Image 1 (tube, helix red, strand yellow):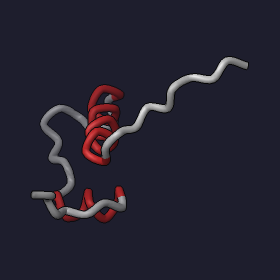
Image 2 (cartoon, one colour; image 1 turned 135 degrees about the horizontal axis):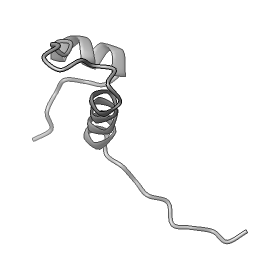
Image 3 (cartoon, helix red, strand yellow; image 1 turned 90 degrees about the vertical axis):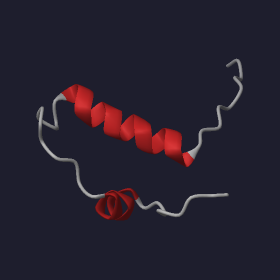
Image 4 (tube, helix red, strand yellow; image 1 turned 90 degrees about the horizontal axis):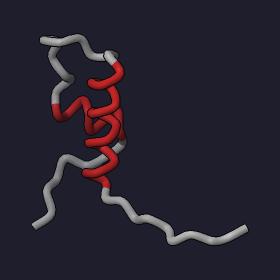
Length: 52
């Protein structure tokens, strides 16, 4: 079994990929509103704070 380098991903990249996946898969209809930033943070288990 050859080992491969571990890719480190940032939280924003993970959030983007999940939202993008929902849009591309059709889970969110065209024109449908996304949840608020606060709700997305709660559902995804992330902080809304921005690092300096």
